[in-house]
Image (spheres, helix red, strand yellow):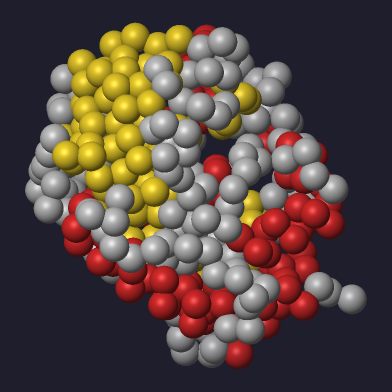
Length: 379
């Protein structure tokens, strides 16, 4: 029997997150192991009058392709990929894995080359999203590999996933709509700021945000959600940052990442482990060493690091930054085949200063700056 929370998740991402309606062409992408959720999303989409298309991935294909592909094969972007991107009205992507370390033996240069080849697809995706032509949402399906990475049993991990999306509530969509008002008000406050400075252990970083838009992440593009983010000015990041949690991408984990920025670009990087991979990604293309995103996590139902960025970047009391591509709707003009989020914990002594004033300390906004409480809902 399907877990009733799976059906509830499907209904939320179809009816609330992407707002699927009659006649919409909906692409559903995910691993075959997420079959119960895929099926429920198809049912919810059909009930809404949409036309769902499913693209399910199979275990081992990515590793087989990347291990054996030639340079020409790595560089190939099927024309159908861009055609599909232009044809759909909505896209729901499900993350899940049989083995999160599947690609750990692949040459980082191959991973970088494959990501660079997909840049036109990422660029078109972001353009259509920014123009309001494409609604999209990324969600997760509880699986053994993710549970293992989070040091949880599968039952505990499933509870974590569904509570992070507030699916334990009678009407989670209503709770997200209510929370959205607070996040929009916070984003409006942040949009008045010109310069942010993050101070924490190993971190003293200044980011220019003057004139950039802030987005309130309210369960629409990600589910679960809970963050506010912007696109930093491309030439106005300076100083040093140390990321509290490992940075994970492509099945690889880079420990204790430290970056130094000058005039917007990374000029020095180091890591306790995985430094070669980090440097390879930074050299992917001209935009890979520039911040495309600066964000603050606001979902206080997410309290622990799980090695899945969909959840980790939402941890209440953290900030995160993405190297590489920025979202055009924030005003970012940075283009790259990379978008790598890294998380900095601010819950113990961390601060954010805005235009010289402290607005955030120990994982929370100061009431003098933002009076609303961003508390996690409880049943």
